[in-house]
Length: 598
Image 1 (tube, helix red, strand yellow):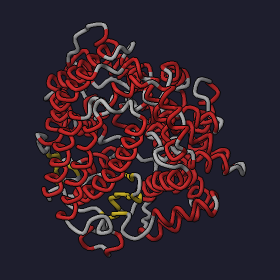
Image 2 (cartoon, rainbow, N blue to C red):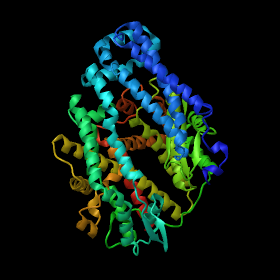
Image 3 (spheres, rainbow, N blue to C red):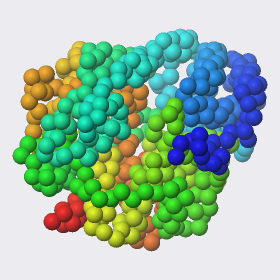
């Protein structure tokens, strides 16, 4: 079904926020005026009463911004509607001007000192909730520059960030459509068609065809490999300038500091990923063995083990399944699930110009919303369960933590969503009636877990090694980055794959620029691996009858350091044994799949 054909309840309706663009513009003008008032506090934050007024105003601005930004999400339902892009650009431009005017805030707060601010907050209970935020601020105190330096960095922030936009232009806006002949028909090689070829083409006869399809799919990235290399080097150089300016020890320390994550945890994750790579290899070799492939390429690793599973699900059927599966989490969880699924809070169906993929988002004083692209397949059911986990997490945090402690960091976000994936898989697998259905579900689940754990660790290692090259003053080239990516793949189990002859001739596949996180969110991907490890532990607790640990985790919001919230849930990432339940769990699923196939 297309979005344009769907009932109104299955589509977003933000009229409760703003009835039209004119109302939004009035509120945006008010936001900018209110935010501009912050400039009046320059030189006055050391006065106690002025400090309180500053906090009140800052809180008001944050909540106004959440409402404005949520409304702009409607633009994702039709990306040809430029009106939302214009609104977003206007807000961004105006807020940039305000940011320049208030760059004095951090240096002035630094001058006051934590002891005095803590005393002031204790004297006014209504402001006590800000103490953790200031504690975090003063942990980073030595990395805050002078008033003039902060103002200068703010003024050049947009131009320094422009290089990120160049990636999107090359990767998407300037991408040329490629055509391929598949099943006797000339078709545009979209992401959907590419996945179909990788999964459904003939294992033996189409082996070389899959290689050629893969080359065609990454052609845009390979043709512009030198440009992508320069962009990536520019991003790393820009970040390294900030590392040195703010006196951090390294890219890694700087990137992890906002979440108070020790570099030792990051390095432990890389170590564990390499050491226990066998389940990844066993899963892939199972596919090679099943189809009796003489040569085995990465392009063979997505082949479906069964073709018979064609079950489809309507939105309502999926909601019923998910609710039944998640009932194990108790009534309180289901109540919040109902809120997350309220009419007009989820935009379900795909359309020609709608944004791809799915997400959940929310903000202080605004109900969480979900974007979907429903296609009636089980993958849509799993995606809805995943995104609903985010929305319910947001609701629990809002209900149990006062502002601003209700705002949990991204490093905790994927725990709530992947818990739902684990539970849904168990539920569907236990309900499955045929061997084919069990094989299908197992293959998809193992693929998801491997992609979230091993694959993201491999990406995290690439980022770490590339950043070290920049720190050492080593120039990055298209070839050196590709060689680095290929070498790291070998360290994470890729030696089981045969080398494609054409790649030897052409010196690599140059597919690494497809990983947009490298460009937009450096040192982000490790969070996926950390979070799926945590969620698997909580999932085991739930199976053993303990739902309180999970509910307490969801209610914790961001009231203290994320790693301390993890430890409260019994998860310590400095210890190797923390990772073993997930690794052993993947290994068991692989053995189960092997037994079913045999």
